[in-house]
Amino acid sequence: MRYLPFAFASRVPLAVLAALVVIGAADAKTLRWANRGDMQTTDPHSQNEILTNNVNSLIYEFLVDRDRKLDIRPALAESWQKVNDTTWRVKLRQGVKFHDGTPFTADDVVFSYERASGDTSQLRVYAKRAGVPRKIDDFNVEFVTPAPNPTELEDWATINIMSKAWSEKNRATKPQNFTQKEDMITAREANGTGPYILKARQPDVKTVLARNPNWWGIKAGLFEGNVDEVVFTPIGSDATRVAALISGEVDLVNDPPPQDVPRLGETAGVKVIEGAENRIVFIGMDQKRDELLYSGVKGKNPFKDLRVRKALYESIDIEAIRRTTMRGLSKPTGALAPGPEQTTPEIEKRLPFDRAAAKKLLAEAGYPQGFDVTLDCPNNRYVNDEKICQALAAMWAQIGVTVRVNAMPRAVYFPKLEKLDTSLYMLGWGGAATDAIFVLQPVLSSYSGKGDGDFNYGRYTNAKLDALTAKIKVDMNPADRLELIHQAFLAHNAEINTLPLHRQVIPWASRANVTVQHRPDNWVIPYWATVK
Image 1 (cartoon, rainbow, N blue to C red):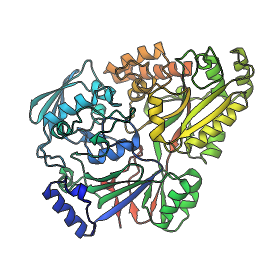
Image 2 (cartoon, rainbow, N blue to C red):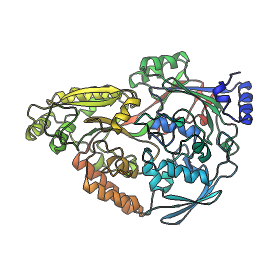
Image 3 (cartoon, rainbow, N blue to C red):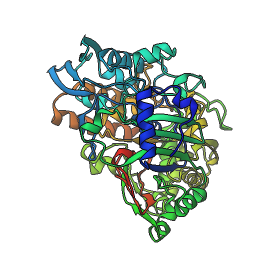
Image 4 (cartoon, helix red, strand yellow):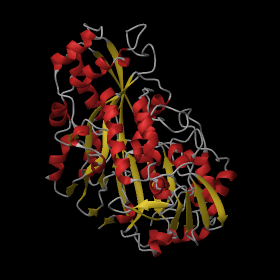
């Protein structure tokens, strides 16, 4: 039997605690999951980062969530009705309780959407787009959107529902200000309605989740596996993480280094689970400042010149990165379109690799000898992120651009970007939502301070793209909207506001006795997993 830490036991209702003890006595199955990095916070509205969202979604729930194929299905919303293009009515699931025993009601929904709309929330664009929630009664809520919203259900699948009473009691009515390193209870404790209860949280060391025996999804047949406990451990070293899997210290690694995948596939007791991720990795550039922060160029900003941006693009040997750095586990692209159904061959086409043309462009732009700049890069977020940055630096050196790679852990990296403390940076974007608005509005639009362009850390402005995105937000005609989406991506490509690299291909590796579902959003869903 496993013993529960007193700090955890003292905060869990006796009925839940008793059930957890029974689970322990029944030889509960544990899934030991490892990844290069750690989740950033247990505040579900603070950071929009895939690992953070993944773990938080096991504790907290959405109004709707996704099945194995990423299709929308009911969750805390039992059913819904579109009254008209700007009004939606939601019937909430009854009998649901938070982990502390507090009943779930409409008050929690209204509170959560208002909280997620706050200035310190990286999810505010989705919360605001979902509209203003109004309580009709304890189990019915109405959303009124400022304009027609063709992605209303997808927006509901991004906002976790918190307990209003718990948040007010713990002075956590606003999302944690992660950038300013704000210390709040929500950064280390949680109280959701989801399939797992937060049992212990040690940042950068270990996060432990215990099965919620009172989860409504158990009776609904959603708990299809046998995992009663999840132990998540960040292991930054690729060699150590792989060794831990081979030795049996961990059961699942959902980001094995590409160079080790063939070996893992031939290792006794280990299996490789193939899968591609809906995520595009790209390079962003400061196109706002008149003088770059980290460059010897004084009095001007090279990245404001389209010729310079094109020179960097054309000097990237993307096939060399795919073949050598990624060991074939990437799909080069010239687009930032999240899903195949919303792109075209014209959008996907990359500019040709042409070092001579790149040098000529730099000379025309006034940099015949090149210039120097710092490339900020995470070293534990994307597959081979630091190695990709080093490869890019070597390629750009061939045209005279001297690049210093400044690699750092994701916990340091993302707050740096949020402060716009960068001249050149790597970013990846993707996930479960495949509609184009989920990249056009938060990533590619001009920054508005109201959700548009929150992740446009280069702070460029593309007027044509902005105008098209404004129409895409509200167009309810699928055919017309798709044409606008294509035009918006082409407008981005014409200005080369970012440098697209590739879509990630991420096979997972697990022990042979573990069965898991590899979803295209790279989320690990333990209640679908089995450990024999």
